[in-house]
Amino acid sequence: CDAEIKVDILYSLAAYSKNSEHIEQLVRLLHEPEIVRPQDHLFLYIYLIRNYRSRDQALAWLIENWSYVIELTGDKSIEDYPRYTANTLRTEAEAEKFYTFFNTKKDDPILKRTLEIAHTEIDARLALIKSQSTEVDTKLKELKENK
Image (tube, rainbow, N blue to C red; front, side, top):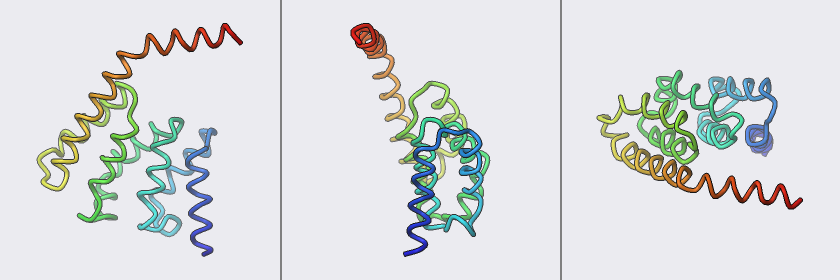
């Protein structure tokens, strides 16, 4: 139970951190197996990648530490990392970082299908954001003016 409480606190910090210093500390914990148990690693990463304030650092960490992630997970859940990452990307710059790194891994039989789906999903989301951004901006300006 004590370990579960610690993990819940850690996840909450990752999900809601705004302070860049705190985010850096949380990202560093991804490489600390004595603090973040292997079975909790993916979930901490997910909370960091979902937080738009820590997304860039989490993605950079994943790219820089891919061999560590492979060592940590083996073949069991390695495809979860690019899958959950793809779910969170919202900008062309984020997508470019993802594609630059993971396109070199598309021949890996474990990652192949996940990366194909991720590519389709990211492209579709970015196209939707682009097609709707003018309308969203207009609506936000209207709401602001009506306040």
